[in-house]
Length: 90
Image (cartoon, rainbow, N blue to C red; front, top):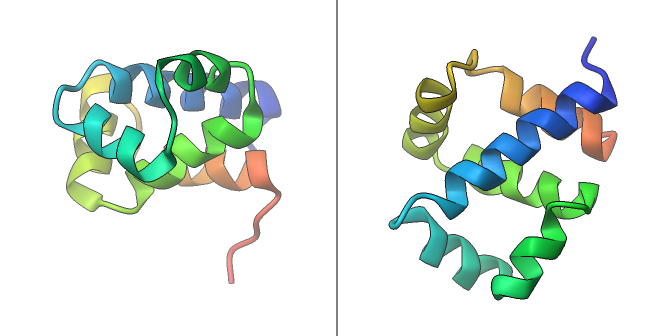
């Protein structure tokens, strides 16, 4: 079972990865509607961080690249998303 702290750590890593990727960042900003200030605020908002995870989960190549870059098992971002949102697997 993943803790909230673990989920937040993974989500913050996802935000950092997304912001640091010159191809992902513009797409994320366009889809989320966030500007630079919004991105800074997202770091302190679990709902926004869940949105970053959702963004990566929506595209398998991006998800795999994130997991490889951060040395994470591929199932961890989805577990973090479920933890942050209270979502269940159907």
